[in-house]
Picture 1 (cartoon, rainbow, N blue to C red):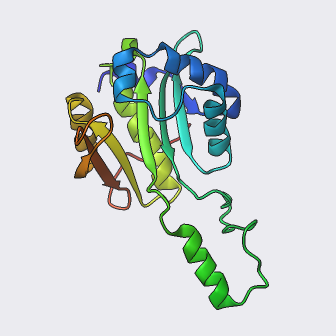
Picture 2: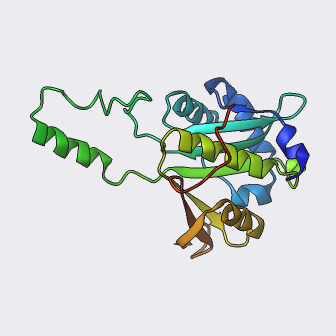
Length: 205
């Protein structure tokens, strides 16, 4: 890894980062946004992401340049279902403790059925590519997920984005199927089993 990629400051996303995050996405080139557009480019979408990170329902980190501008963003969505706190009290606002055990279990299962697999994504400003920053941020956010007990993570990547595919394979992601994003079967879905992933030690941000 190029040393430069490991010396750029990386920190956890905050709700207050919404405007800076929106600015970061708006500065990405049309080609970059073709490959990577995980949400609508609106301030409310950025605020929602920051709030979900602070609530423990998502993981998000950003890299900053010397002027404090965000130049990279890596995240994992759907880490915990809405309503599940970071302390692990399952759906406390939706379930009554006075319910009979069997009914409670049925309701818990119905709430969890169909929940999406935690989803990884990363974007970098063009000027900060090719220096190892992408690999550093990817490994950092995956280590945070592993430390939080997330069992596995998925991602979608365009087939023509060969550099990203190779990076994910080198980290340990496996191709599980084809996806249709802009066009039919133009992408790959990849999954990483974090229980088996060795990582590189505890992530400290």
